[in-house]
Length: 353
Image 1: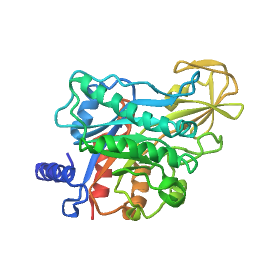
Image 2: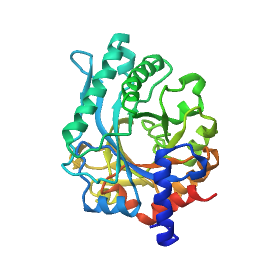
Image 3: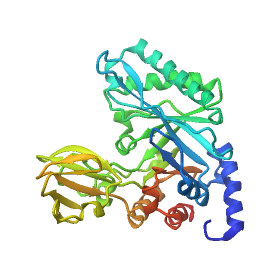
């Protein structure tokens, strides 16, 4: 519970209920904590459930499935559908999400776009109905890093999908990257109800010399904009994850999720070259992956002080509306680095006038 005890907790709950009914009512503006779940099995363990309760996270953005081009037929195909539990918290708002690769919209025509919108909605609806535990959604979200060349196709898809949702009083939101928010005249404004500003993955992941591609202050400052002027109401997503970036011959090979320095402590196999940077000295297995001698690893993660620093840059640029502050993502390993006190500091920063 945040500082102020039971009285403040009750006030936050009241504000949450009001804001859920009217996002842009300035008289009830509040910061509404939320979290993303981006794995194929949605089954929060006891530690995750406690973390959700302690931080009053009554909204969870759940990735339902991905859409990518089929390698053989070159057609949009759903993949990695989530497995939902038999029981879910009745007082939590679950937002189904679908990730669609940008190349999908570079390869399909108008008729196929309209068909894709119908197929995506039908599949999401079936998954909700078949779960038996998932409440009917008030919002769904599409995640796609569109570009100027795919804007027309993607926006047509969104407009068609929104038609299906409007008849059921469901809002449509999309993820918005920093470059899209900063240069709307180039990337356009999606025809949706809300946007989720994704304030992470800012640096060049594939560049060996990058210090932290997830988030760093200098990169963030380059993309800052007056988000209060963006034509859509915006929620905000911040990172709480970590990973290892594996390079071979100075080329990005893969990401190893939740990798910690402790896993690289054996000097027989790993040499520490600099803070967060290692070289494989002897070929070995790591987290199920085979590493060759000479491979290089860069550890990337987020600290509470870094998030607080960046959040202070963002706050004065946001509209004075209620918004969801969503953390990416829910995982037993990631939440270890961001316990209750850390989350509360971030919430308090945005709540302070």
